[in-house]
Length: 183
Image (cartoon, rainbow, N blue to C red; front, side, top):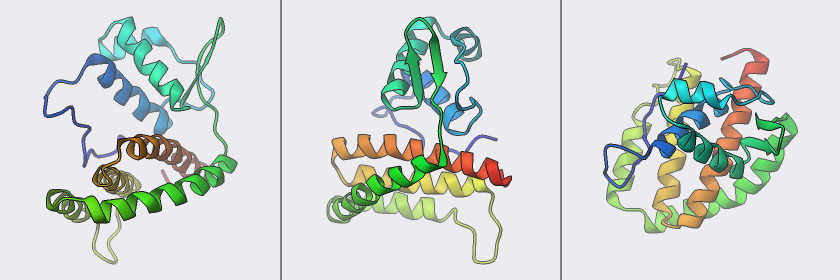
């Protein structure tokens, strides 16, 4: 089941995003949510058919995902979804702990009233105490909250780095949840 989109990616106000970006978001979601399993071969032809786009947008998306450590490209062997392990989670959190703290501090100083209102709107989706919420809803709220903090920090380098690390962490959470059987 896909994550509810509480905070869609924007393209400077344009309704239509470039095909490579649409492909990137779609493939990234499939990898992060384990619809494309760790270690599996990436079938470019199947992705082209699924998304209704040509080879170039798929290739560009896969190159970007390779830079983000979600795809492994092996010359003359193919492209694969990067393997993951629970031990990676500790290393990611060691790095994220410092960078997330910096982002929160900057966001508190640089955030706009509009960004704070967006945060309140996202947090309004949290269930009341004692109510049960789906993992998908909680993940969507968490991801939207983090993206708002990153944007409010007003540091594009920090934002890009944290988005990449967040995707890796989220993928590990899906992996862990799948192992304990709660998804």
